[in-house]
Image (cartoon, rainbow, N blue to C red):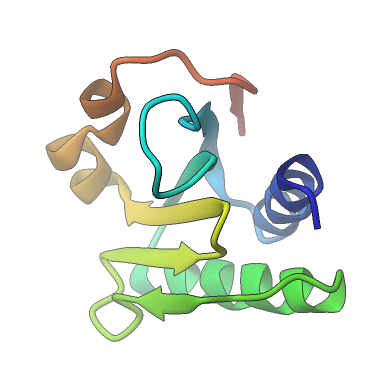
Length: 114
């Protein structure tokens, strides 16, 4: 599955479960680890788990592979590794504290969706 298709599947999954402040970053020129990074805010630990589960289900249904899911137990920051796409699902306070958007110092590719 191409990166663009994978990003579209993930974005749709996050929107289906009412993920907030979805931002997409093209980081292919900044790191050899991944092509795109998606950051999304959830309203609670339960919401973050549901977002992660939906991403996994939708990616697998579309024929993609999931390399791993980290942080699901604590569910303040859940990372879903899809290889060419890394998904960061965070509570609002956690996202505000780590400010990943600032870390990469780039503008989101797809803007914000709420």
